[in-house]
Structures are given as C-alpha cells and as structure tokens.
Length: 349
Image 1 (spheres, rainbow, N blue to C red):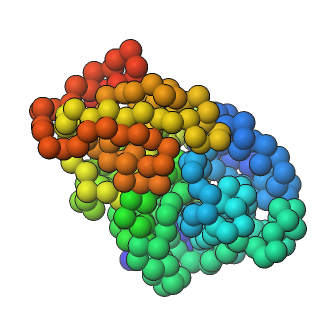
Image 2: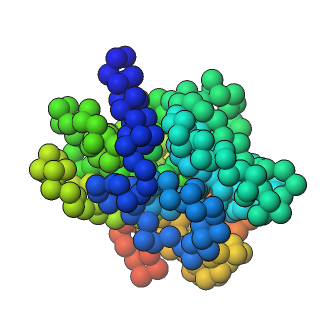
C-alpha cells in the first residue's frame, strides 16, 4: 500500500509542481500527437491557450459519433480533451473529467465559463471531479452510465492498472467503448526503475507490457482489444536513455468495447459496409489499423468486428449482413487488398 501511495504522490508532484508546460517534458512519450485529425486541430486551436499549454498527452483518443453522448475522460489534466469533447457531444451531451492533481484541475475549472460562452451554451456540459481513476465509485459514477471512456497518456501513471480497467468496464454501458492512447513497453519494466520519479512522470516507468495489458482485459471479459494506431517513442534525453534505453516504447491508441466477444476471430460469413454518414469521415472509417472501410464498399468481417459495429453506437452508420447461424471456422486474418484482418495474438487486434 505504501508503494501505491508513493507512486501517486510522485506523479501528483511531477505534474503539479515539476512540469510547467509541455516543453518541460524530457521525452516524446506524452506528446506524440502529430497525427491529430484536421477537425480536432481546429477545435484545439479554439481553446483557451493556458488549457492547451498545460496539457500533457499522447495520441488523439477522441473517437467519432459522440453527439449527445456521455463521455468520461480519465486523467483529464488541464481539460484540453474535455473542452474538445464538450463541442463534440453538443450542448445536450455530457463530459466528465477526473484528475488527482489540484494544480491541473484548477486550470481546467478556471476556464469552464470561458468555454461555455465561446460555444454559446446556456450552461456548461463539462464537470470536473477531483479523485483517483482507480475508484470512480467514490466520485458517484454509477454502473453502466457512460457511453465512452477516453484517456490520454494517463493509465500508465496508475499504480493499480487492473483496478482502473475494472472500473472502466463497470461504468461503461453495454456496447460502450473504451478509446484511449497510452505508452506501452515491449517487456516488463525492471522493478528498480518503476518508482523512478522522472521515468514515472515521463510515462515510461509505469508503461505496461502489452501482453500484460491484454491479460488484464481478458480477465475482465474483454477478449478482443484493437490497436487503432501507434508511434515509436524516442528517448532524446541522455539521462533517460541511459536508465531505460534497453526498453522499446510505443504510443498506442486502443479501442475496446463492453461486449460479449469471442477470444478468436471466427468466421460466420458476415459482411459490413460503412455508409459514409459520419461527418468527419465521409470517405472511409477505420475500426482499427487493419479494418479500413471505404464508404459503400462491402468488407468481409469476423463475428467480433460485426458485433462491434452492429451492437455499439456505430450501428446507424453501418449495414451489417449475416448472422451467426452458420459457422465456417476461424476467420482468415491475413491482410487482403481491402484491408482484411491481420492476425496478432488470438484475435483481430
């Protein structure tokens, strides 16, 4: 328990006291955001400058089809993603940001009225809660109450990652989506380095070994997790590289659903077709890094992919043909000319 408290306090100090802007970071781990979509860049450009300056995230973990939804941002920091989400969910939607760093939350709360007025809302649709992402129940976040959970380079900072994942799948509605970016390692981090304050704060010391992450989700009943995109993280600081340069790190954007999926890609002869109805994606939609749906072009899919599309909020944007009456064995996950699944491990991830 003491080590858990020490890690939390170390992270709180690093993000509340040591870092004053994103330029203070020693690695690219928390800033691998070169591929932010154009429509999100436009929204970010309209945010309060201090909110953007004090944001430390990786990737762009904001999925489409959010209008009118309730979205939970774990480790919201200065509120950058929350205020982008505020616009994406619309005035009738709801955004909840959770963080344990008072200095970061103070910035987020300070500019809430500014963003409400800028968006022309009668009342803010953003709520910020001070607390730990490992125990969302204490913050009053109920079972099956959230449509989408997002997180931007934060889960690696938690000393109780399995508990964080358990809470996420507790609060998600059936068919709800976890969509987040974080740092992953190609091996388990040596114990001597996991408590190093700088490595922790730079999102390296607490990075999960990918296979351990997969096992955590498997135990929670999430048997198919998808990689949406990933970038290699460079260790440009000589001191950091000397300590942990033997580990290869990636910034990965991950998608998973609260659905009763199978642990392998099974073939039921199903086909899915994207209708092109998501405004930011008129020509194509990527479910993950190997399921590229061109608008109006049918694509063979495994049973899990079919369910992800037909039993989630994406259903209005897809036509899915076929059911699970007839089973044809394992789905052929070799890459095809239309981007059919590439196998990695046991499922389509």
